Image (tube, rainbow, N blue to C red; front, side, top):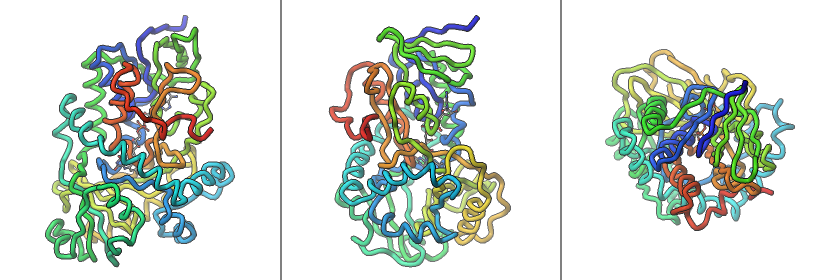
Length: 415
Ligand SMILES: Cc1cc2nc3c(=O)[nH]c(=O)nc-3n(C[C@H](O)[C@H](O)[C@H](O)COP(=O)(O)OP(=O)(O)OC[C@H]3O[C@@H](n4cnc5c(N)ncnc54)[C@H](O)[C@@H]3O)c2cc1C
């Protein structure tokens, strides 16, 4: 007979978003069950660049990207790529993405993102303290590196926008870059974001957050949520293979895999994936102190525990295609321009960012079912936004301290 579990809250997905929500709700005294067929933290949350990037308010779709799109698509060394076989399936998402990249939309999206980002670091500090994760975080800022030419103060759409939104950013001369990160080759300049931080181990962060949620009483079920069935209005049923979970509230936090489940609740949300890659080099002491992003190469180099991780780039191409060795080779060529003496690549990884065309997550109740709460689609910023998302979702579940305006993140904003 099928096993039946009853709980206050069922959370679908044990990535950084689902785990942060589970930890907070369990702390509020809720009965919480987290459902995931895989090890907690083994999705996109496993292999990212590890930056907590409160400065990153420029959406991916923006006027600079729009202007450079032809060269970004044609240049084999571009950080942006598309699998041609996936093009027909991608057209609806891409057309929305291009529309959202127009100045008026991109500006609106940036303001909405900045509104979330302003609380990202305080929320992370609180989460890290409560879950005892602070030893995995470093508050050293983050550096954009300009190798060839330093843009004018107002030369880039993103930089102008950050100034307008009051993001703290410091322009650095070549000498200042060299003083800050002496192991880097000579550069044309840099932009330093002093409020940024990074984790030295995203996998340890998620597994310890899962343990901290479990210590507060959250239960973890190794199962895939196959079906979402609304019951009598007050309950939701999750069918997970031979297990059935009845919950007063379901939180959908299955990252890039959330779309089909949202569809079962009647929601057509244009969620797709921006595939991203990492490679790692084993080393005892990293040559840099903080994440560095060489802007022309489109990735981050992050110092992590026992290794240097090179992570980033965007490949549009869906959830099924295997790792593309050309993208790995691109990362390797790129990082060897900064550090020619690196040893062999130790590990390679492909991950799936959950991405909406406007670079904004979906956070809020489903249109038809107030007890189904969406929390997915954090794109390039899921690590950064985990703390603040968990605060908002806990507020929605407990019906307290809910920010007055979540309109920009509504599940039905594309309807
Ligand atoms: C290369 C790269 C670099 C990045 N760098 C950064 C960075 O520096 N800073 C930053 O803030 N963000 C970064 N990101 C983005 C960040 O990693 C993601 O936004 C974030 O991990 C998303 O978290 P999540 O919990 O929504 O999804 P995930 O971590 O993908 O978790 C989703 C979980 O849902 C589970 N699941 C799927 N289907 C089901 C189902 N039917 N039932 C139950 N469970 C299911 C999966 O098994 C998975 O465990 C980067 C991403 C990539 C790929």
